[in-house]
Amino acid sequence: MTMPAPPPAPASAAPRSATVRWFGRWQLLRLLGKSERTMAWRVGDPRSGQELVIVLPRVQPPDAAALDTWQQAVRQASRLSHPQLAAVVDSGVQDGWPFVAYDPRSDATLAERLPAGGLAGADAAALVQQALQGLAFAHEAGLAHHDIQPFMMLVSDSGQLRVAGLAVASELAARQAAAAASEATARQGQRAAAERDVLATGVMLHAMLAGGPALEEPDIARVVDRLPPLGRDIVRLPWQTSHRIPEPLRAIVNRATDRQERQRYRNARTLLRALEGWLQAEGAAGAGPLALLADRLRSAGVLPSGPGAAARVARLTMMESQRTFELAEVVLEDFALSFEMLRLANGAQARAAGSGPVLTVRRAIAMLGLEGVRRSALALRDWPGPLDDTGAARLEALMDRLRRAARTALALRPPGYDGEVVYLLTLLQNLGRLVVHYHFADEAQQIQRLMQSAPSPREGEPEEPGMSEEAAAFAVLGADIDAIGQAVARHWGFDEAMLKLIQRLPLATPVRTPDGDDDLLRATASCANEAVDAMAQPAPKVIAALQRVVQRYGRVLGTDLRGLQDALRGEARLTEPMPLTQPAPLDDEPVATAAPARRTSSLRAGLAR
Image 1 (cartoon, rainbow, N blue to C red):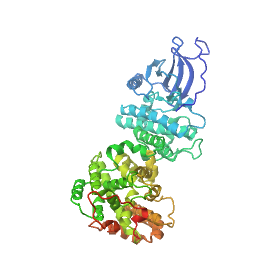
Image 2 (image 1 turned 60 degrees about the horizontal axis):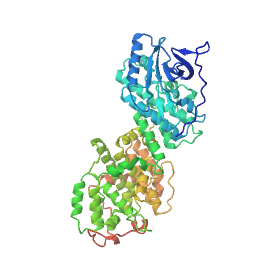
Image 3 (image 1 turned 135 degrees about the vertical axis):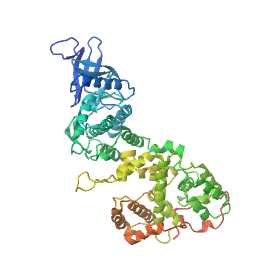
Image 4 (image 1 turned 135 degrees about the horizontal axis):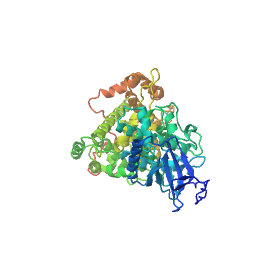
């Protein structure tokens, strides 16, 4: 990234004169910026010819004790070494004013670099990413910046950023915090200061993208004071900007400045991870969201084998002469094994030229043979892979919920449609959710929190809504959950028709009359998934949520509220697995240990109408 050149600096005058201002031995060349808390100057030393940047608080410490507190914080900051933190070259007190000096090298401030229309999304995100790396390092060392401003960011011609001014406003910030909440402990105060840094960084990113300061206020600290809980203003990106802002980045920035405190980023690492995820997905040579997973898929697989995998492998070992539908019943008990069979069957090396996609486990078994099933089962990571107990419990709960959705889809499917196709389609519409829960367990929990509504802080007002799943995923991962699932399925070799089938119908789009089998199958799976999501709502909201599902799908699937409830209740009463597959022409012969590779000619081969 090449940054815009800053305006030329005026030539410095070396000799002292009445028109030249001085700060001790330094000649004040130009003011780089000032806020309510700090100011920054470009200064020169006539004797050495060196130019520096000095940062000072706007208010002098009131007494010796306050000055000592300030010096302790600055000394601690000066000991930190990080590529994105400007190194302190001098600090002290001049005429009662404490200061910190930095070597600017050939850098200009971010305020000088910003063009009138703002920066393109990727350029702005890359700069803020670097600032957050330095801030996260400082926060973890127990220090906060206290006055994030564009004039505190030193940016080179090549786009390398260093944060200056760390802890310079600490004494004033400490006094203001003590006045606001004198009962707060030091640790609580440090956490609050770090959160304020993150909020201020979000406001700065907003200004970089919008092409002007938020709330028309150039002092970021004042903007922060006007946002809840201190104020009632709202900061959201405008829809009309000089550069197009991609929706994931828009969601990240709007979350950073959200009017609801609970929805904001609580530390620099979470905002940093979101920006890194978006930048990685945006710039990975067309790999998209798969770039977030590439290394993880190689080391941990798509999913781990489900609980009880050893017993399933033992059962498969004993099933030398069983028919494919009987083998499929065992395989379908395990999400990971089912998906692995589909991956292998749909892979470029396994599919013959011109053959259609494979969407039943029994056809995959016929193609790969029993030995292929055994090898696949043994190749999977043991449960729960790299997950800890909490992450494993959440993934298992999600799997149970998806099994319920798949069984509900079986009850809703129109007569004549292959149960295994419907079952697997319903699961595959949740591929992204499964992958995120496995590979991004902490982020998955954060997404769930962002989606939850909360009571209004003011009595009598409606509750505060949570984010949509798409917006929450953008704000946490920098990528959409469904897009992650689509990327994995494309990596497996699924064609465009299959990719469309395993994508849920958008909630914002009305469900239209199906044009054919594919549309009807997709609608059936989507309806079941939405119905189970509705059941997860708080009890008072369940019926209304189910009614919305019926309004969307009732005419298409020929069901009403009672029918949908029966489908959900019918699944809950099952004590034995519902048969998913039935003997078909493919199953006339027992499966040999190494079965010949039989292939379907099209998706229609998976339907029995």
